[in-house]
Image (tube, rainbow, N blue to C red; front, side, top):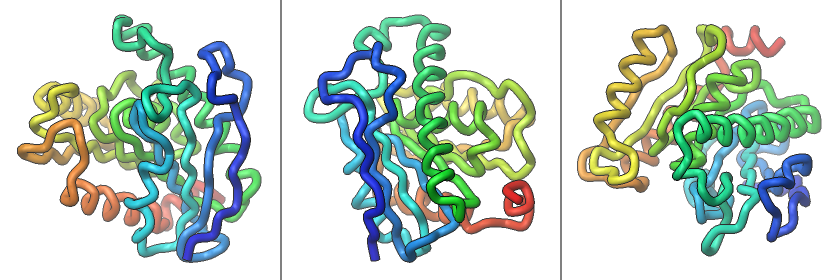
Length: 238
């Protein structure tokens, strides 16, 4: 059962990077029940739309509220998260872009949780630019996020404080990705683990900058488990 409960207006289709005060356009609906305790926030890739996720969540198999924000800037047949020129910036400037956009997504998560106080567990996920945002939300907003799955992500930035023991991050990465170098991702994850970040990595031979049935199966299983609610996570929400 899918229950569509909210579709908020936000920036017009021709919005510019300066339009940062408006709420992000988004869709949210429930699966498997009218008041689930789990919230799944899924962030699309550049040039896509929130509808990208619908086929992957339709068979979720557990009660969940899905929150699908839309990038504020039009690109190709869809939308993107960052203004043109983002890729030409140095790492510090890219990180600043991600930080600004992640703050907007975090505000949206807070608003949805205020509207739905039954929500107790939050997972974030995304692919490509959406993965960059999912990772950043996990490390900079641990009070909002319990579990995160960034996919095809650069993993920009580091935690500004220790993450809770209940936090979990799993990175999914194609080994043949021509955009995100899988070898660099392996090195990055190992360095983060050595620094105490609760993160692990699963790679997929032959997979490029894309998803596959095997990846989606792993993605769904990990997020469902993380959103199922352990005693430790529940006590943190009380």
